[in-house]
Amino acid sequence: MSLEENLNRVQSRHEELAALMSSGDASAEDFTRMSKEYAELTPVVAAIVEWKKAKSELDDLRPLLDDDDTDKEMRVMLEEEIFDLEKRLPDLERSVQVMLLPKDEADSKNALLEVRAGTGGDEAALFAADLFRMYQRFAELRGWKFEIMDTSSTGIGGFKEAIASITGSGVFSRLKFESGVHRVQRVPTTESGGRIHTSAATVAVMPEAEEVDVEIEEKDLRIDVFRASGPGGQSVNTTDSAVRITHLPTGIVVSQQDEKSQHKNKAKGMRVLRSRIYEARRKALDDARAADRKSQVGSGDRSERIRTYNFPERRITDHRINLTLHQLDKVLAGDLNDFIDALTAEDQAQKLSQLS
Image (cartoon, rainbow, N blue to C red; front, side, top):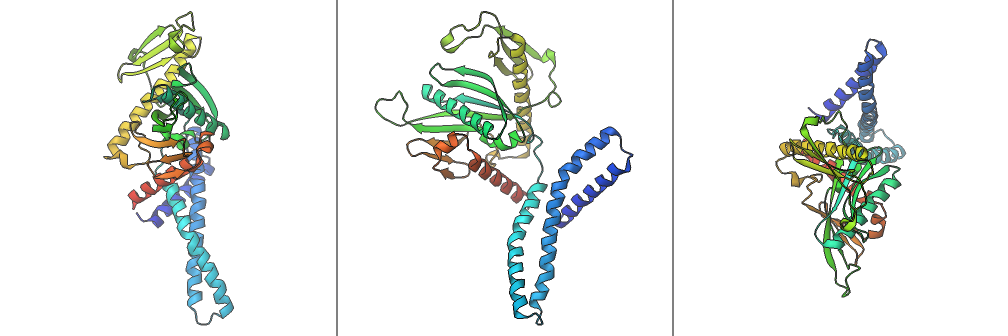
């Protein structure tokens, strides 16, 4: 199907939905479903109309420019208008094509963020804490809610592991390319010789699944309770309030101990478990669709080094798109937009190339 035919199909569907909703014959459930689809198509149709209008204007102006009867002054005006339209059309066409790309159903979802210290001991844990705070600031700048679900502290300001729920508009679509290994190069505070060390932390961003997305049966769960402990193993709770949930069919294990209430820990643990199962299913589907996921920006492969943070040179490099910015302080303060916008654009470009 050509682009023109595809656009006509979208416009026809938009008109059809408008007619069906105004007829008064639809049930409440059907009306809700159609309203949602109509709302999703409306900005697409507006972009299509703008592209078609510009294309039509260009088709009308070109013959006038070629007409020998067109005077010099008019010819100059026509050349300027044609130049502007020819410059705008590719951007308008690409905008329409991007809007028509298959949507990731998880893009509109909230997200669970998991940051874990990797190789590098205490320095890796300190870097994991830096990353966790970076995402917290990013969420705050966008007006999102950042709820800390669970942390495992090293006692010197680092995190072995930290989990947060991020709630807001389009959270997963903005953060989904952050999954992977983040590497840091800097002189640790404990290093007396001033040598640069390299350590790493792993970031996982998962769409937060709802109960309708993943149904979990009680018979598939093993739930163990234990006493919560703090850094170094000292007891921080005198009751068995910590919860470990094992999903038997998948072997996925979630531990939760941040709350003093066993009930609250179980509820938080189920949120994490549901999202991990949902993400595992998404990954299985993606693997089936793409023989070589590593060629995709959004592979989310947690074993793949995606970004290096070099403190001595104040530089950050994203290895997937070969983008280097000397804006370390700005990024760690939560301004990730330059990287996220570039990764999103690259992902769209790859998907468009696969369609052509």
